[in-house]
Image (tube, rainbow, N blue to C red; front, side, top):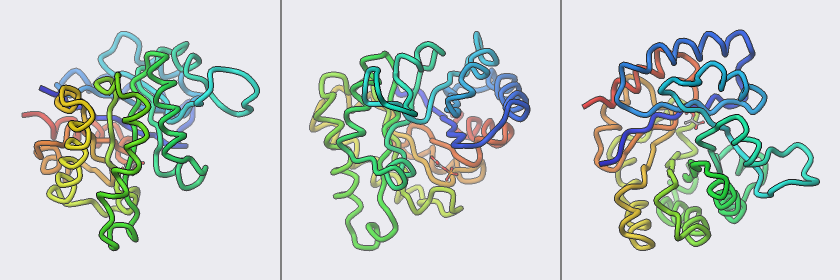
Length: 249
Ligand code: PEP
């Protein structure tokens, strides 16, 4: 049985005042849900998030981390720094990191290994662009993105989370239909099973891409969709909690 995971990706949004209200509202509403909730906040707000959510049922995490342990990597944040602020999760390989910061799947694999070495749960993102979908290469693209990660952390696969995020659905208001998403999730689970059949049963595969309260019920009802990675709707506590509510049996 895989526990539903609803993860918020705040991206580069927020400030001390709006964060305080959002964190307080998520904390207050979280008790009512059986899903696991996590907010992935900008790194400068980790201390604030830790103070606001400590001893609550809501976990927190970061949106990226370095593949390196420590040293001359200006601007980067190390896994052990995230642990200093009690992060449980870290998003890796988000399409915005891949497209705007030139992150390759090999980079993502190294970061995944580093995250696991520090006891963080990586949320590894994969997904095709619109051009790739239209060219019929979705499955090829997703498998190619995931394979370096599977090879790099083969013995620890059960500790990762995967997020399928079609790039064309992120922040656009266009959502994959539940059937389209399920098809890719099932494919990812098959790929996991080929690497480690036991892990395939426990690894949670999240859907991300314009998930909102009104489309979440149908997406989350799919057998291989184990939760959501939520961008825009995670910035409104009511929407974020309504998505968690949509996952209730
Ligand atoms: C995301 O950035 O991971 C995401 C899914 O964004 P949105 O929900 O806004 O499409």
